[in-house]
Image 1 (cartoon, one colour):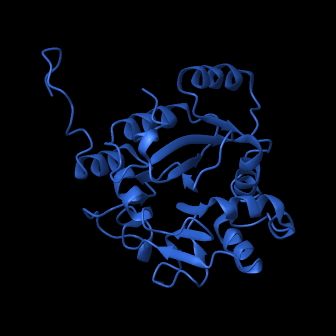
Image 2: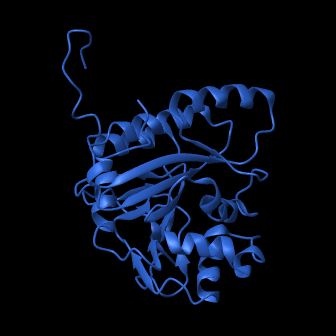
Length: 257
């Protein structure tokens, strides 16, 4: 089951593309994340959410075969024209490429790390009443800040309105400043262009996994939108168990859980 579409697209109030930046060889993680997002209930209020895995150019013969199978089965892969990297332009290439390669616009576009667990229904609810223009949303850095108009949103997962995505692809400001911490650079681009007059920090609903990152971490809470730095299987187990992700599994005589 492909998780790329969540909700009723004929009755949605807004559209959101979530691009999960990851590496070609992380086959197991992509399959695991597909299970997680396919298992979640549709957002309420209605939203159309597409989830795509974002890679740079493939460099190995086996990648071309295995990822071709993923594309045939799930149709949830974006392959950008770049060399795989974290802080050397991949995020810029992601945003700047979308207006050219997507068949339709979205209201919002999100960049997310592959060690971020997102709860789609709370995410959709948090975006419902926000502006659809000039909007920048996420977890403001530094960790102890509550002011989204200073500094920038953490790269764990942040959302831009579509007009800002288009601006990134057209402006000379981002293209001349693509080397360095990608989340910090996005903040610099927007500040330099006097963009993102609507800024929202969703603390404490997004945070790093308990105990992993000082002031950016806290205990799991019911009102969570996203948990970052979930890297080990025991951490994934704790998160999925806390939020009862498998609660809706149908009873069957084929298994006993």
